Image 1 (cartoon, helix red, strand yellow):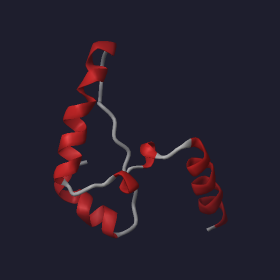
Image 2 (cartoon, one colour):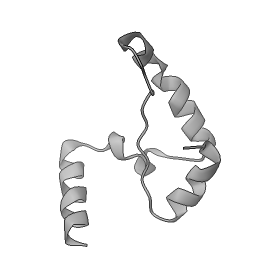
Image 3 (tube, rainbow, N blue to C red):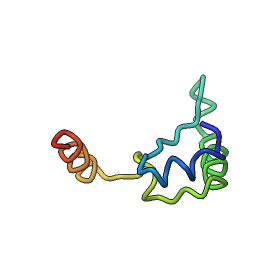
Image 4 (cartoon, rainbow, N blue to C red):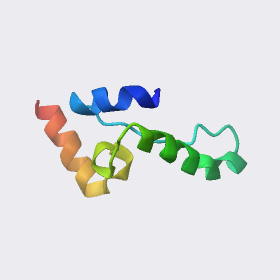
Length: 67
C-alpha cells in the first residue's frame, strides 16, 4: 500500500503488516527499506500487526472473532 494512505487507514483502526516483498532469500534483508517507507506514513509499532507477540495476536484474533 502507498505510504500516503497509511495515516487514513490507521485513523480508521486498520492495522498494517510490513513485509520486504522479497522474491528471493537474498532480498529478505531489504525489510529496512519497507520499514522506512511505512514510517513516512506515520506508522508506529502499535499500528503494525506483525510486531505483536504470539499472546497479543491470540488475544487480537479472539477479540476479532467475537466482534
